[in-house]
Image (cartoon, rainbow, N blue to C red; front, top):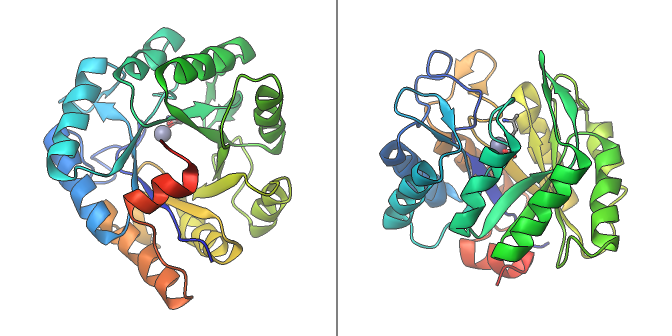
Length: 271
Ligand code: KMH
Ligand code: ZN
């Protein structure tokens, strides 16, 4: 089996310190968390940043601080910045950190209800993000919350807006999007042609079962406090790395090696 790429979404925009006391917020905390995650088997860090007071931010200067701090500790990890930001953030601000030319960035392929909010991704803005990523040589990770969004990804590829190998991330379990039941991941994967990469990020209680399902199906896995704060029912996780380490152990048990950052680059076709 191909090696398993583990992404850790260490911070997110919605998780709070009140709910998860071990949430990394400052660049230094994020760098420590990233290093622990890489040691535990992660090869990609999905990165949101916060100001010191915990507020979600899309300030490029703050992203640069976090990226520099992470790079100083774990030189070769793949850093994937978020262009989703927090619900309600302007498109202009969401796009700003792309100027830092990270290796990867998230590209959200549609609008959906997001808990009590609406996460808006207008078709023209999706194209705008994709074109900017192409201009800056950034590999998009295609965030999909509903099956129809997969077709948006293929449409953008057909139009030549998305080039290179496609990498989908199925984010399942957002209240307002598709839930994290096993049949939903099977349905998503049924649309994946040969040569297209995919991973799954299960929200809340779906994180672990969907990860296990993806490991045996040959897909990739995202864990982390952005999507889930618990280790098990009612038990708050001690660190992001604790969640990564469990996935590495399960993957090893079923005979699937875990990718290093170098192997993840080769698998995804990142230059
Ligand atoms: N915070 C969510 C509204 C992404 O990183 O691109 C969107 C999100 C997706 O986190
Ligand atoms: Zn995110």
